[in-house]
Image (cartoon, rainbow, N blue to C red; front, top):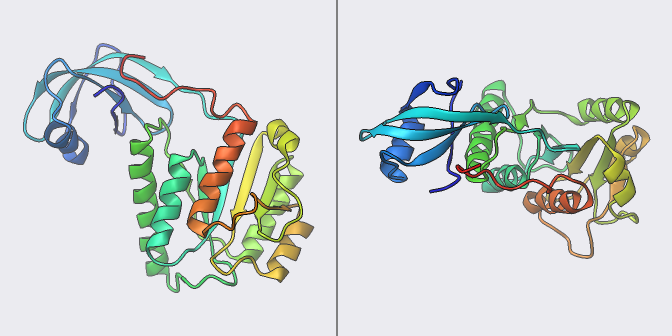
Length: 257
């Protein structure tokens, strides 16, 4: 059971006690079958992790004692994924894969060629909640000490402004595009403190959008000879960035750390 991570709103001080109940407690006690003497990890979702030992267990809760806590430094460079709205279940897959691959923030984008549309405030609210729930579950599976930020929906003008601001601040913005002539700029990625990946919809990024984003400072790049689905592109790019930078230098969280 080493390395199981559960999320809580706040952590006890070292030596303090906490009852893990609700959905997390039920999952730990009933599904994962933690019992007295077992150790697990709690995270406040903001980077602080506590190793705890189970002192008591019921059907849907665990009584825990905090042995020690530490703060995990955020990955560097920070990577934001701008994800054009995929169709149906591929939206959840895109969020899941990007989160497991380490995205620090996920920004939904209503690109011109998106088939999916969040046409009302209510639909947008429900869709964002679904993305956040998916990101939380994926982060827990990946033992992440931090949850990625799931930001509000951007239209193209808002995204262009964001790109302009990011590049003006020294950030690196890349549009993943199958027709781009350039590949991932390894040296620029390694030197950047903030990276943004823009992933288009199934039909690709519209030419006018490419022009506007490029004018704002983004660089069109391709990942390789294979044409990837929109749901997989960000995760593949994050893997490449992990190799090109120090983002993959750390080890998975373990309850014995």
